[in-house]
Structure formats: structure tokens, C-alpha cells
Amino acid sequence: MPSLVAKPAIRTARRLRHVMTEGERKLWDELREFRRLYGIHVRRQVPIGDYVVDFAIHSAKLVIEVDGHFHEDAERKMKDAVRDRWLEKAGYKVLRFRTGELADSYDGCIHEILDALGVLK
Image (cartoon, rainbow, N blue to C red; front, side):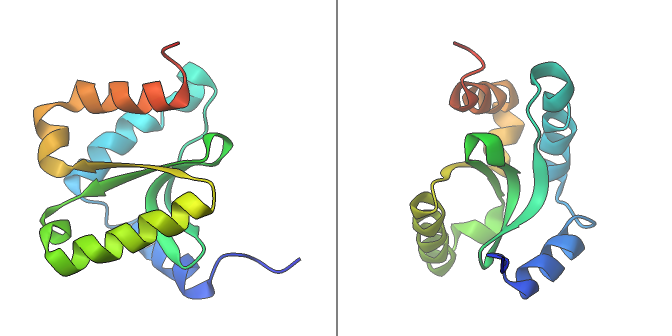
């Protein structure tokens, strides 16, 4: 069966795993514990189609993105919207957190992720 993931996305994902931003690294430190705490496997810098997402939980069809200043540009916002629509058509729910949001309301962001996973019910 052919892969649904583009080869350039695989190469990009491998590279990005070694150059995470501070916000991504902080969130990853928490998300990696989800397997032990909740039995939920979180992957980082995951190729899906032509895209590489910051974090994915395939079992819940959830994508988590950490957006820095780069994502504030109007052109980048349009590209992110196209990407989000593609991911949603593929069955994924997309949660986006700005790095400032993670810094100011980290617990709230974690709460939103756990809520999306149904852990808080």
C-alpha cells in the first residue's frame, strides 16, 4: 500500500524534531507524559499528507500546533487556514496555541487539550 505521506514531509519532520522552539519543547515535556498518565500516545513533528504538524494524537485524530511570531503574517495565516481545512477534511481536529498563550496560560492550554481528548469527562 502506498504511503499517504509525502517524502519531503518525512525529511522535514526528521529535521524539525531536532530544532523545536522553546514553546514546543515545554509543551512536549508535558505531552510525552500523556502515555504514562492517560494511555495516550502523542507524536511530535508528524508528517500528515504534505504537511508536518507539531504534535499529533492519531488515536483521537487531534493535531496540536504551537504558533510563534512567524504565524502572525497575513500570508502565513492564509496558509495555516488552508492547512487546517485539509487536516479537518482528513478527519483531524486542530488546536492552535500562540507561544504567548502558552507562556501566559499554560495550564489553560493543557486543560483545553485534555478536554479535546475527553480526559476531563
